[in-house]
Length: 114
Length: 114
Image 1 (cartoon, each protein chain N blue to C red):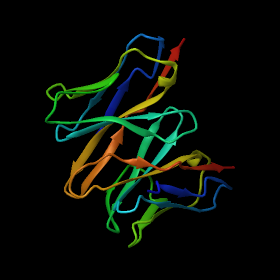
Image 2 (tube, each protein chain N blue to C red):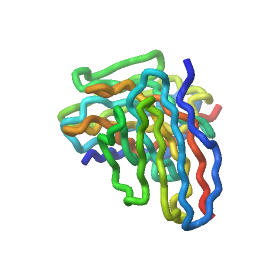
Image 3 (tube, helix red, strand yellow):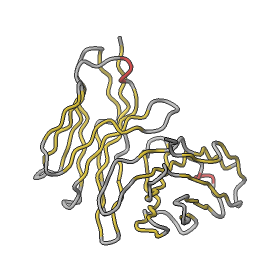
Image 4 (cartoon, helix red, strand yellow):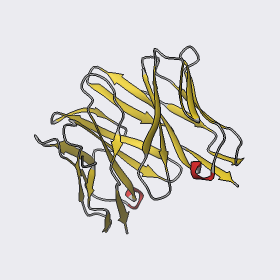
């Protein structure tokens, strides 16, 4: 069974640019969540999608957005990049219907903003 | 919204000793509490979880306890080994009408020296 796949693995962007990250969940998983990981701040919740709908959103500015497609694949977009957006972006998939199940994380996309 | 505090941020133990990591959460409606282990350069992986209708759960050398009244839960690792060295994250479920998400603590870096 394939795991959670994130692409690309590494990305270098310039301040002011925008970036799109992709996440393909485990087959059958309909929930995809996105997290930003930085040293000392742990895993900060960005948003969660289920059946193409954003169900929850963390405390990030509107420059961070996402979407989910009918095949459950998800993308997140960051516009007008800032140096502070440099981080490891992790997505996690889950069966999560009405309850909570364990998340399976992808390997992440390492974004560097210069 | 949910807030999860995790302590200590770093923990150093000798091989064979026990290690305890503690977390507190703010939302009394939270009902799912997983723990993740993240080795250097790798993705977080679920190691154990507990639901609010259970006070304790064990899996070989690891155990988790939950005190719903005090809103705190702890990870216990006995007979630590060098391969237990990693960053450990606790999490609590965020529940609202839209659905569920996991909110993570900032992590504990465990170092086990032989």
